[in-house]
Image (cartoon, rainbow over all chains, first blue to last red; front, side, top):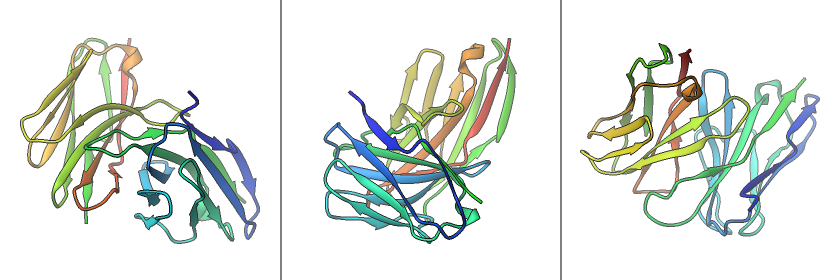
Length: 113
Length: 110
């Protein structure tokens, strides 16, 4: 099983450029998440999707949009990248049920110059 | 607003020197508290879920405990391979959000 797959692994953008980070899971999970991780800041929730067709804001949604394309895929879009969005982005998924754990991808390291 | 505070930020121990990491939380209706381990350059890896005060879970040299206000991750006789960042997270009953603390960077010296 591949688990949670994120693409790309690395990306450099110029300020103002747009891009989409892709995430796909093959575990038939309902819930999916996008986090960003900055030095000393832990993981901060950007957006999440409790099921196909629904998305909700997390702690730091400004500057981002998401699409839950189907049950497998959850994408994160930066419409106009800013240096403050330089970070490592993690996607996660979890199945329904009490206290089920989230499984994480390997991350996308994004640098905005 | 749900909050998770972890302490200390960083901890250096000698191999075999036991210690505890703390996770204090504020959440309206705790559904579950999670502990993860994260190695450099990798995504977090699940360790434990706790969901009621008094609960304890163990895995090798790690034991997690939960009270109504905090959780502890006890590390007994650690080895250098236990060096990692340990993350605590909570979920409330009301929604599907999982909120993380900033983590504790643990370094075990041989």
